[in-house]
Amino acid sequence: MTDSLPEWVPEEYDPDAPLAERLPVIAEMEGGIEIHVEDKRGTIYVVHQPQNLKELPSDGLQLDCGPRTGYWSHEIVVPGGDHEAYLRKVDPDQDYDAYVATRETVGKDIDVRVYGVDADRFEDDTPEATA
Image (cartoon, rainbow, N blue to C red; front, side):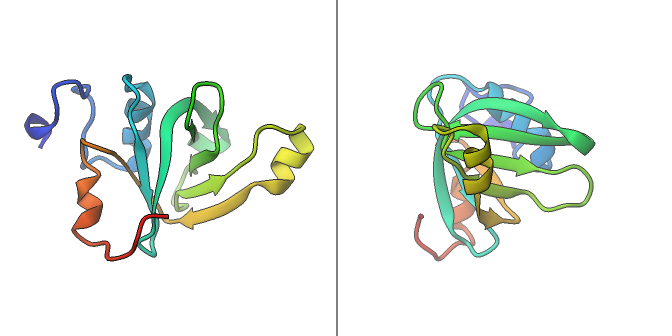
């Protein structure tokens, strides 16, 4: 599958790998990539560019995504263990307590893809409109 990917995509990127393995590679992609997220309902969210990848307790990952460098509006969270990945909408332009209190989970049991690379996988099984 990797031989059909654009040449600018890192060799380490395997579209068939679990999300926890793909997310660090997506976070390192350069060039203003656009990340798309699909939840279990089939809703697709355009969360823009990767901003910052963080390791979470219990082997989890969080990728902050947003429209411009230094600002994020979504967090892709991949907990460790058998917990499902989810997408949160956030407003980081407030004090920490307000930021934590206003985070909203908008997508559960998600998959993450890169526009122009493998986001077309969503089209195969998703009848719903983009959110």
